[in-house]
Length: 146
Image 1: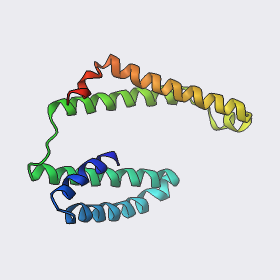
Image 2: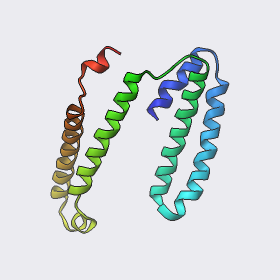
Image 3: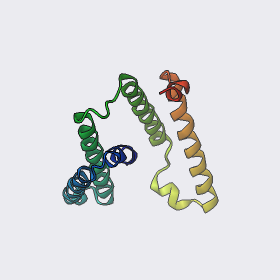
């Protein structure tokens, strides 16, 4: 969704409103198709996944249009940084899945324990993510100069 907010204004700045609208309609139709395909097996998670897939499609088509017009091209640095972010996300998700209590625990606990656990899990997730970035070679100066 963030990439859509970055890519779409590039078209608007060039007085091209039709292309992002057309791509948005394609993504909306794809979202409905994904919903129908995924909701039966995955229930509410399928709806969320469908929206995510449609957003990826939207961003991908916008990027393709910008690249085709010679307006925007991802440089090697950004691709490496994206892979680093994906890796850090994978490490974070793995750690969070390992520490996440089961449904029975959540149903059995008082609100205060639930809140404290959620805060602890969020802190662990953030710490894991940033630690994985640093281990992967991320330095803040990399994004300041680009």
